[in-house]
Length: 301
Image (cartoon, rainbow, N blue to C red; front, side, top):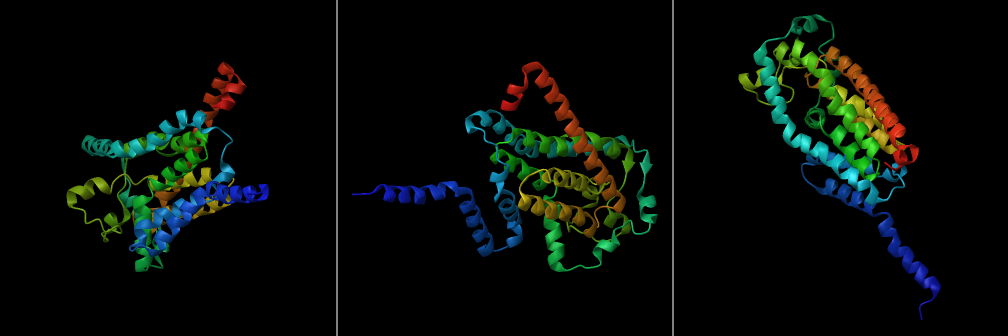
């Protein structure tokens, strides 16, 4: 006969994989990255491991059934945005260039500022670093936002999902567009007559669209805003991983001669403004919701 002690032991061994299912999956991902060729193409998986390893420390004690009605639309929103928004943004850029409404052309001014081309950040250059920063820059507009949103979904925290989305592209596009419409600044390599740090092999027509709209640096503003929000999480590993990743995004813009130092500084200010504005909007909406429905219902949301 099977004793009660045997049943407890059996339950313990069957319960352990369920409890640590996510970590087992992450270990499998790590092993895949180690043995897979072209590892630079799988850097995003390493970010997932660092982001999700201790996600339980930030998870809310909320039933999935109650969370999913709001969580699913919130996790689908950024996916759909990156599916359909880039063509719309390209149309906006072409319209912007055709209107010729720029009030200021700052290429000559930015070029004349000592050290503004970021040469200090290119003292050490190696093929590996160049490849790393190219991958970072290519993904630095989306991953800093998408992974925290997915992480917040797994943590069943709809408010954090809203905060990450709001402080990133939603508010930042609104805040940055007046600058892009009135201030003309080209990428550093283009102004200095250097090879493109991203090796994009742009035609003259493509370059006329791609190298504009540098001030402020939106790669910087997105990354720095996500860094600020990441430090509100309880998970120390996630905070450190995201700090390193987001700072790498900012550094890549200077290493690859994409942005001027002034672009980066303006991007940091824009990030601070977006996070503060996002906090203010959430506080205002939460206050009105609380006044209308009461504290209990607010907490359930």
